[in-house]
Length: 276
Length: 276
Image 1: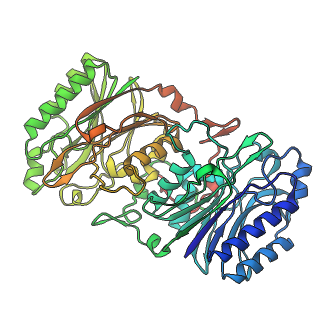
Image 2: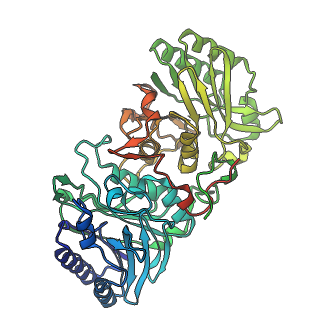
Image 3: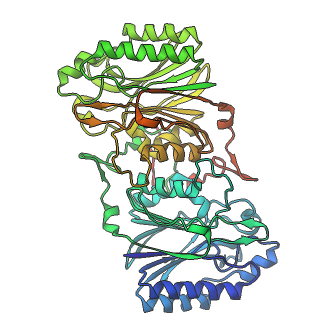
């Protein structure tokens, strides 16, 4: 499976421009032979909103023509596309969502459950767990940006069978990361290692209304190996990595251990999770 | 609070020598003004056993005179000591345990719940959750080595109020770590960052019966900042770090977010944990 992370700089208050930008990126990734194509969070709208009207103007329904356009591009390469967008729900509320689709149409829409900073002004929280989707190119779990700071999300996705966690992201730039490299990078690799899954963080780049983004897209193998990124110069770029998702089905480590079989839920403290 | 990680190379089949080595390290740390002193996993016994008799010969009861000796050293500096040892349980079974003690005596003994590799030949699994201890120098959670690969452990400790997670460790050396630095290092920093706690991994060093250890002791702040280690040359060394544990009580991040208050347990997949 060839994985693409299309790091892009969408432009606030220019939804039409962003649709073109994202569609071209998908087309380029298909041309590059990508089977799974991940785009940033809110790639259709930009991020630094000034008013509810701006979010409304950029919001898309699930039956927006854009998704058919993306589906047609995906069909050209038998690909799966995952991208963040501002969603207008059937309930009229706005959500910070990620869509997964292929040539046959929508596979899933996930509404971000952990909202960061001003996102709370513009969006309603998702009320469904992050999903794992059976796709033609493997089992893909969805998570969006700040979700990565809640280890319960990735653990839950991996335990539910995700082989790849795809994370559309808009990460603010850290001028002086505490560990000498963006924490986003460390989190992606540690998340992959702990859960023995592939992790694809597709970040945005650029500066928007004074907010500088990290441009820190990164792809990790299930052993915590860096398979793609970070992008030198932190600008727009397509990362490509060959990922054998079979590897993520094998949770063995060392000679006799197994990262999942060795779990001891009855010996962990506290109820980290209420079953759905 | 001044934290010390005493990276040491215990010697297999020389328990008396190891007791002296560990006791001198504690004394040195007290002399250096340390308030909390962490020693490696199985520091009293060494790690690469050849027979059950070897483990038996090195195993200690909870009332072993050694712990009084350590308590007397701790009392000199009003310190808390955490160290790994081979425990002979009151049930006759052997455990890979960590003791926490101060000048007043034992505070807790934790029996490792995730056994690595041949540890399963020599030790019984612990049956109690990793504890959080109220000490004179803050709330300390215990975890041992491979436990760090189960994010449930650190998350549970942090949610239960741990400000520092102390992890006696015996980490085998990785000749070619996938990320260019020992995964132990990345895990410690990511664990600290995700849970907004201090993490002290006290690793052992040296080569024992052909097994080379990482010597990768590391201290992380709650923001994922490296406060101590890794040890250049990977040999015996005392790492010291000033840790303001108050910082670990504040889970805020960004302007309006909070790593704990933002959790959404009812929206996570699967029961990661069965309540105790």
